[in-house]
Length: 186
Image 1: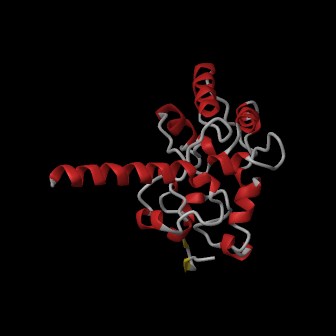
Image 2: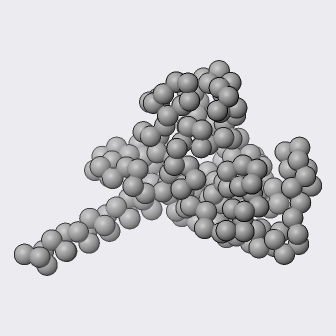
Image 3: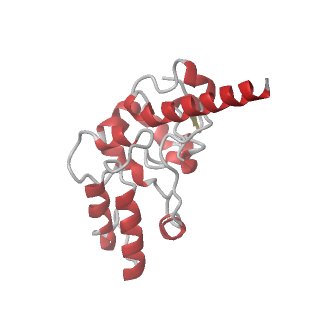
């Protein structure tokens, strides 16, 4: 009997992993159906695992997961650190190389993890803002711009303000909690 339970558990684990792998292709119905039972348990975007990247970038903002932008976009971001959205974020050459390689290796168009594929499709080639991707715009189109005025939000680039598990790569739309508004369902 124990062997049957172990077999069933391994099959369910395999199904969950398969659902996570194809989740990026399920733009409109990410958590409907059977795998909705496991929502919140897995990352939508591969979490940041590079400590040097986290140290350098998260000192000013969330360390955005590489899977949120295509490789060409990360290249543009890294090549313009002297004017990084109005700030000088230049790095030592060895840090620049290490972080650039990390971002390129995990970029949205080089990985099949979660929703990264959706972030890779469409839009202006080499765009530098995650918030300008067609996927991001479609997923946030019903969020009123007035919500951004809340002191804990400020802009759409502040993912962690509403997606409490964003730093772990979890952007489950059923777990959104907008400061000053509360739980959000679109």
